[in-house]
Image 1 (cartoon, rainbow, N blue to C red):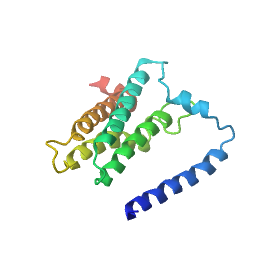
Image 2: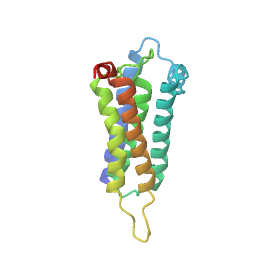
Image 3: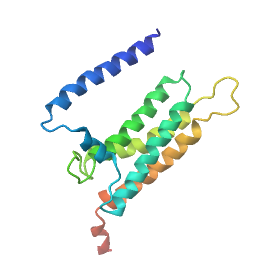
Length: 169
């Protein structure tokens, strides 16, 4: 086995071992709560719009995983990071009961900036393999980056910005 594959296996095992005590530390841990939190929120239209943005970013990054070459491990890790950021933003940010981050927290800003910057970085760093006419990983990454930018700016205007001060001018 290659050294990078061994390190990735060790990393995955470490993450799995650290997730078990956290899950058992919860008093009422139920998988159905997580599944229901992953579903679209229908209480208002802005939450549904944000969910559609996050779903589309997640699925574009999942499609992009098939196009990124195995030799470009950093891009695979960055793409996986975008997928995790979309899931964390869906599950942990908001005003619902399971949310741990509020819309105005610094962690929310970092997640939103990552959803915008990382896919565009992946598109810029992707190289084509020998014999390929073009790199197919660029198109989904650019689309995910633009969706991340739209999500970031809409989330900022609707949830984070205090627009009541603008009425004074």
